[in-house]
Figure 1 (cartoon, rainbow, N blue to C red):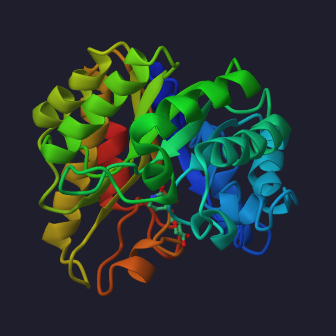
Figure 2 (cartoon, rainbow, N blue to C red):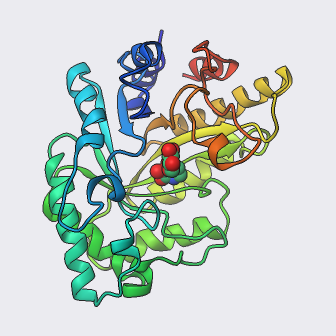
Figure 3 (tube, protein in one colour):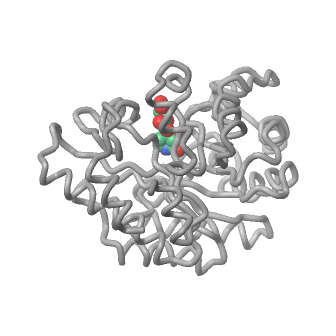
Length: 319
Ligand code: XIL
């Protein structure tokens, strides 16, 4: 059986993947696997819904890239996760380089959400409302949003998102929450800040950009997930990849990678409020890792030739 079918049978809502906009219409082998609903029950656009793709200049909205994924999901019946609204990165300079009053930047956020979330209304299982607001050392991440509002941009953003789409799940999404350190503590506080302000938050996304051999154990991961579900929000792994820190990976390292994937997926199965797992692309042919972490890679579950790796088999056997 394939991964989404197995995941659903095991009690998750979905096993999903990111869709690389530049590959889907040119690579038929890629498209065939990606569109297989038994393998991937939910899709997320890798880049197409980000601010720089949707509102590169103020007030001009473009959905060409975001619609690529939404249209595939419509035609296959796969679900859709939507990504992302308020984020310091892939943010056009007209936003990040402006000097804003709170009122003016609130209006920029509200207008962006009204248009982009409005365009996809009814289609998104969840929206990442705020992405990566915490730095790795646990301090608040510097951004135009934090500089203008302090942490008030969080409740402002979640409230604005709710007004546009009352039925999608509103998520906070970040990486390195898996290690249960200072960054995790701050993310817990973030959820509490939103809740104390009376604003809606439904979920926390663990991006899951992890490293072979340094991925926490299944039980440690379950412990971290539960710190969030204890606050009344659901959790999900939203961008899972587990990279080899040096290449080529030995066959022993491939086995370790498989065990690491099994621990991550297993931890989701162990926590009642963990709804699903999304890999950040499924094939080593298309992955942001080598572009971003020089010399590292092969972080996914199919190799560059679309053969299933040990990681695929380990995931299938943990379900
Ligand atoms: C990455 C994409 O995969 C790349 O194609 C792009 O160049 C940069 O962004 N955290 C996120 C994702 O929330 O949106 C990022 O995606 C990876 C890290």
